[in-house]
Length: 368
Image (cartoon, rainbow, N blue to C red; front, side, top):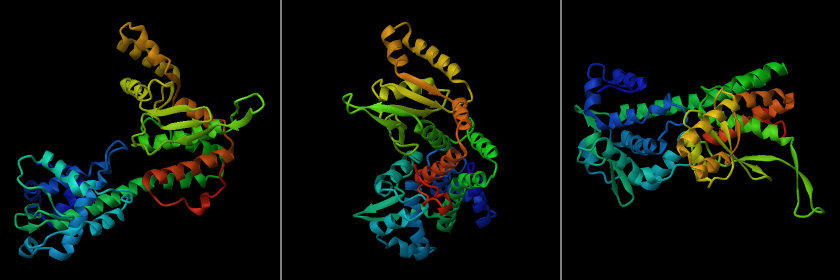
């Protein structure tokens, strides 16, 4: 069986130079962890599965310290207390918001689906105590817990390095002294190849700044009308179940959804989620908004097949299309201080997205 991730193969080759492949082939646990490591080179749509990975790692971590190469002693062990494991994996990188579902059911369910012919669950659950079945801790007589721990620890290191790459880019842009160079550097972050998570955060920062200077007038009566600036809010994290709304604008109640350009069926699905309330789509494409609009219109016509009610339902729900072209034009219109604010916003919201600390004090340039 082919080892999927290079770093997994490298660790096994180092620990078992002559038998790494056969040990891997014999070990469902190694295969399972290897399968769960895909996010090191995937985009934001690749699930990191930290809950499942960390649930297994938490048990392995304590097992390695207390029962390594002691199979008979381990067979008499009744498991680790839930609280001990829970606090441990919540302290790992990106684990602060994890719940207990992985320990209680999700790992075993996924493990059974992946290896349907195996007789035993991976995690033994016994009245709030948890341990790994010994069948999966040994391969060819070798205790593989050390190898499994190294795989997960390397996975955490690679994810952290990947997540912090944007911070290094932002710091380099912020250090530029020429305003036009800084502006061009921000525009260069907007590409079709940009990770979806990063594109959503950057587009939010640009839209927030672009609309900030727009004033509208609201009131229930002529006498109560007052001036208000438009304010844009994010509804949650990139992969959150946001019901088809990524940003909401106050006080006008405008919905924004960030999306890819290729699958127009998803546009209609997003419209359905909000009961055909008008939506502005922010599209990660270099195409013009006019071209995307024509393609979407053609797709709606194809879906409707002449049914007027369907065509009207979807066409009236597309309030505006914004592409990379518009976002770059809006960057050109921003002042130097507004560009600095965009950089600060990107840093803040990316940290929130990734559960990574607070911005450095050098970003504290004031808040609108």
